[in-house]
Structures are given as structure tokens and as C-alpha cells.
Length: 346
Image 1: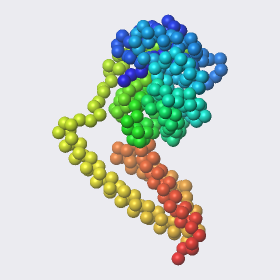
Image 2: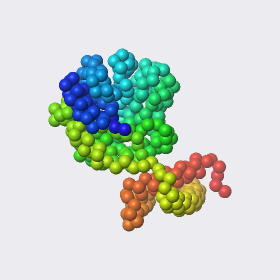
Image 3: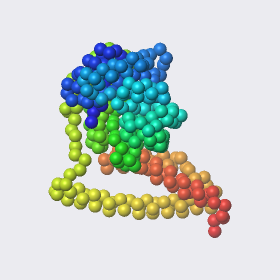
Image 4: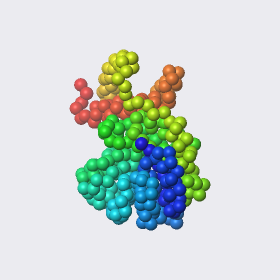
């Protein structure tokens, strides 16, 4: 499923022209920002209520469903009044439980579908908490949108995908409709295809993509919007994979490979348990000799050595760092428990 449309509803002509272009190749849900939360005042902050009338016209003339972002109870009431078919909660709003609760109260016992974008920062509990607030208010048609997370590091994308958080949410709630927002994740047209393909390869249900009839004139996020023909071309380039198959040859092959992984995983656990037992002995030894838990130089040398050996085995620096950092943190924890225990070492 693809939800597409302009970042902002800027004028009736712009909304209608974009909607016609999208409807021409089968897009059934138009998204358009009516209220735009901007970082700096004085920027275009949306056309407001008049734009809801433009979306009404899209529904009437083109038969499309229409969706927009809400960030307050007032926005919700206006959307319900003007017959908006679906709303979403933006990343900045998801990060504020007070606003989410206000929106949830306004949506109480309505049957309008609600999509929730991930919060600005990588906080899975905050994302889940927003869904819980809506669910407790009686909102049952819920879904999520993964648009990446803000980062201070220099990366190609506008937002860091951190797919592992999306995968964790997917694992916990496998039946929850899950969309990716490649426009906000990439921040530039050049990245939209690769991000979209990655999202589909992970098994997400659909995409929310920004499309504008003339992106060069867009009043917000011009660099990340595609024209309807460009969006059509991008979508046609994507490979949609089956979630599973009953093919006997595939099942036999995949089951054999997974059995091998199961054996390796069991060995990994046994190895980690053995390593942790040695860490406990080290903790006891340090306690006997009144030595601090962490020797930074030792840890730095181990990590660099493992990164180098991992590279020789085809393992990425990021992967090796994450694995050994987790192992190190657990070793520190068990040694700290030993040193914190007042019972003297015998």
C-alpha cells in the first residue's frame, strides 16, 4: 500500500494537480500536511482549515481517501468535521505524552484509522506508549510509520533508519500495519528508492512518500519530494517479495539452514556463559586485590583487536563493536555485583 502526496497542502490548485497525477496510476490515499510544525517561526506552517476543504474536493472529485497530520485535539475535531479519512501523529508529537493523550481523548471511540510515527529520538518505549494511549481511548485501527531518528552524526540520510528498532516493534506487534517514510528518512530524492526497497525487503506493508506536482516550488521539504511521474517510476522499480511460501524445495532448504543456525546459536550461548564465568572469577580476583573493575586501556586494545579480526572474517566494524560492547557491559555488571557484595572473599 502506498500513501502519497505533498509535504504541505499549499494551494487548492497544487493539491488537485498532485492528486490527479497520483490517481492516474492507482494511488488511492492522498497525504497532505495541513498544519506544519516547523523548527523556526516565520516559515510556512500550513494553510490550516481551508486546506481541509481542498482535501474534501479530492475525495469528491477523484474518489481518493485523504490523510493529514494532527498535533492537538483541535486538529482532530477539525479533521472529523471535514471528513478526513485517516490521520497520523508526527514524530515531534509522539515524543510528547501530554499531546498524545490529548489527541487520544479527542479520538475516543471514533473509528478513524490512526498512524503513529516513531518519536524523534530512538525510544521504542515512547513509541509503544503512544500506541497504548490511543488503544486505551478505544482507537482500534492503529498503524505505525517508521521515518528514522534524529542524529548528530554525519550520515548520508536526513534521519538514521536504525532498522533494529523498527524490527523490534514489528516482532512485538506482528499484526500492526507498518509503513516506512523514505522521504523523511532520506531527506533527498536520491535515497528514496534504496530506502523503500530496504523497507519492503524487511516485510513492511507499505510506504508513505511525499509527492508534489512541482517540487522546485514546494514551500517545505522540496528536496525530498517526487513528482507523480517520478514516484510512479520509482514504485515500478521496486521488488515486492513474498512474505513466505509453501514451495517444498524452498521449505526444505530454508529449514535445513535454520537448523544449522539453531546449533550455532546454542554454541554461542554456551560460549558466552563460559566467558561470563571467567569474568566472575576475574571480579573475585580484583576484589581480593582491591582493583577497580575497568581498565580502559585493556578494553580499548581488546575491541580494536576484535574489530581487526572481525574485518578479516567479513564482519563489519559496527557489528563487532555492538556485540563486544554488549559482552563487555555484562562482564562489568557481574563484576560490579561481586565488588558491591560486602561478604569477604574466602
